[in-house]
Picture 1 (cartoon, rainbow, N blue to C red):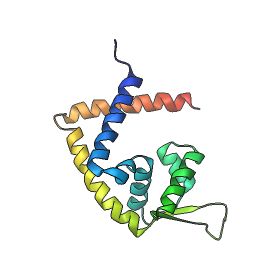
Picture 2: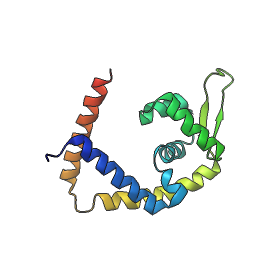
Picture 3: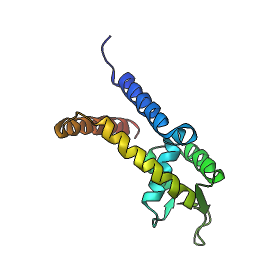
Picture 4: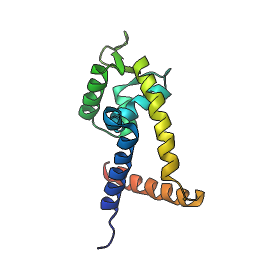
Length: 145
């Protein structure tokens, strides 16, 4: 059977996140998906004023998906949400100390995983890979407009 982009992307996605689960173990391994990315983003932007809409745009997810992820993170003590006096409809999101501690461990595992993923791949091959991924994303984003 001829290779198909959708099937290969799915295979790659599954292999990467299975590896991340093995590296992180249990509960933390599952957080590497959206919740882990949210924690990382908030920890990397500690002084930023980040709201739910910013996170939805950053991770290309719907409001309901983000609301569910933020609800779980808040219940687990990884984030706090607050409404500024100027606009109570907006909910600002910030990482807690617990998130910062989790991020330190996640970040070390991510760097280790990144090194393993690109082992034996030249800079030129990576440039081609990222160029193709960018074009696929552009095609998908153009189709969503």
